[in-house]
Image 1 (cartoon, rainbow, N blue to C red):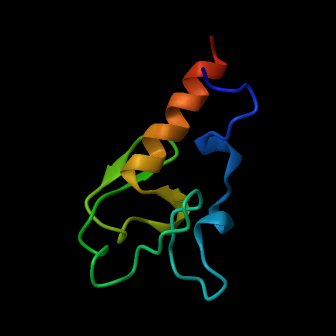
Image 2 (cartoon, helix red, strand yellow; image 1 turned 120 degrees about the horizontal axis):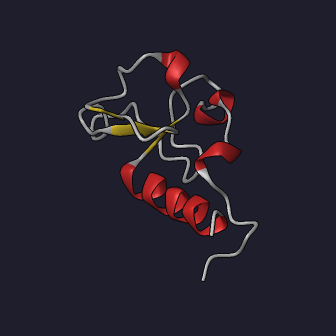
Length: 81
């Protein structure tokens, strides 16, 4: 069972989704999105909107990698019970 204080997508801010050099990253696992392996992979914003790449509008951030978004959303749903 998920703890009531487990992180959710709403615990992260837009600035959490950036490295110190302002590169986009998943704020939960800190995987950098701009790399030769990540540019073409999808990202998900806090509201569940999926984007085909990190070229999504910056004002929609933070962005999460799909596995982290699923974990964080599960935590949020568990807290709503």
